[in-house]
Image: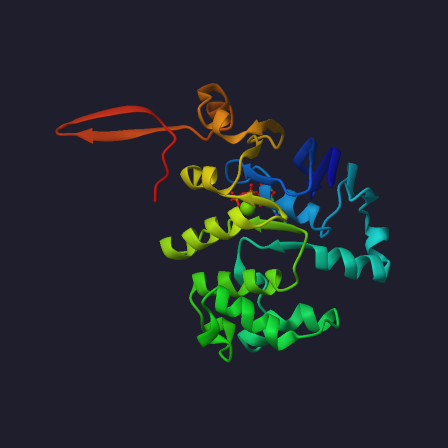
Length: 257
Ligand SMILES: Nc1ncnc2c1ncn2[C@@H]1O[C@H](COP(=O)(O)OP(=O)(O)OP(=O)(O)O)[C@@H](O)[C@H]1O
Ligand SMILES: [Mg+2]
């Protein structure tokens, strides 16, 4: 479904993805890991066709995704409804005057039918029905994240790119997300810094190093028990612990929340 071959991407002349290659089959749930700045959000934007590599090849369903290809309006409308990205920061996605308008925007653009029914269905699923008439700007971060998620799910996409989808969610909503993704047949690529949550979200992981290379592609649980790989990815850290009056220091992979 997705083929990435030797992709290198640079911002202002600095490579932030270096020679990345992988394939993802339909229906896979892939967890993208890496420290801050390793290139996770950049990779998701590239898969969403928002930015384009300086070298290498990206094919979605056997079609090469290029700037030129996405200028073709029929292809672009189809690709944009099938491949969706939940941004790390919901504020950059929200621009409509009401939550209802926000969720229905894509459906209207694509001339879909039963708009009311679809919006109400997803608003109900995500528990945001009471906010439908409100300005999204007035919502809490977690509520905004749910509005953004609803605005994508309403399109019934084939590929969901979720950048830190649980970062603002409370335990109840996170539990819902885990169950929802577990039942979903679509392909999902998710980034998270929450390693203990990651095993609930998918089986395979792709791991980016601090110098923007793909250093692991395989079973997530194997990765999380491989101390050498975790240290290489800087996902294992040392910090001080206080035991009574004594401090000691050792490696940890636990999450902070
Ligand atoms: N628009 C931009 N212009 C210039 N540099 C950018 C831009 N966006 C990101 N970068 C840089 O690219 C690198 C990768 O950023 P990216 O946002 O992909 O990292 P990330 O792995 O998602 O990090 P985080 O865990 O903090 O979300 C970083 O060094 C970042 O500073
Ligand atoms: Mg990011």
